[in-house]
Image (cartoon, rainbow over all chains, first blue to last red; front, top):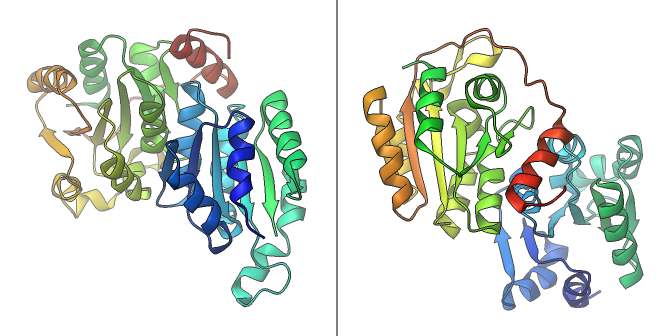
Amino acid sequence: MSLKWVYTALREEGIDSFIWVPGSKLKELIDEIEQHDVCSIGATREEEAIGIAAGMHLAGRKPIVLIQSSGLASSLNAICELLVAYQIPVPFIISVRGMQNEANFVHTIFGQRLEAILQDLQIPYWYLVDEKDLSKALHSCYLTKKPVIVLIR
Amino acid sequence: MKCHDALHVIMASIHNEIVVSCVGYTSRELFQVWDRDRNFYLLGAMGLTVPVGFGLAMACDQKVIALEGDGSLLMNLGAIATVSRYKPKNLMIIVLDNKSYSSTGGQASASAFVELRKVLQSFDIETYFVDQESKLKKIIINSLKADGPHILVVQIEKGYREVPRVPLAPKQIARRFIKSVQNKEG
């Protein structure tokens, strides 16, 4: 599935800054972002991306974080201690590794528990099908002042 | 120079700059020394002082100071590579280097074994070093006049005073910070 359309949809929803750590499923979307004259920042790891997005929100921007699910696993502390604790609404687009047809076994251990962990942390998530999912997720993010996650299979 | 003395000189040298402070005793001391709405106190999320400061600097025209510790800096040294990659002119990173993890009992950090100044200089960012309180103010004032990013490594003594926790809830810190920085309700 090409995700190029996601860039335009996010821009239409008011997202003005894209903070990313690459993932193979995010390649087309990140390439698309990088082609436009928009704030696009590559971070060295996912926790850093979350810190950057938090800072941008505090200054009045509307950033989004794009990472893959292994990076979510290594960033749960930043999500809890920074975003949830300070009520900083940062949305995420996360490509999921380790669920179905995963070629690399190591991703399956967290991947198969990903939804349960998000439910436990009460972090809302949606699987991306069309623009409505983005719209719903972003609306919930800013209304509840909590991080939300849009998952890409 | 003690941590709180360094913080006092730093805060007395700046005006309207945004300040982000490192988790642990750095935030606690800063609250005691010079609390203001434009201070963003990290109460957790160790390692994210520079990323939060960098995000702020990329998102606005105001000058931003990230008050970082050596342990927190080393936890996320890649963040300095990102600062070097995008080079925000309005960011100044001040590393309060006591070569230890003071908030957790004073264990030595790797900064006791590597020269942070040399490591940071290799990132192609203007880096200064100061170990005398009398020179600190001048370096800060001069750095803030020029385009950044800048890094200032301040050698401080180990240990902190027994100061209470920051008596603000995280959401309260964020709300008053947003109000001050964006001039609106958060």
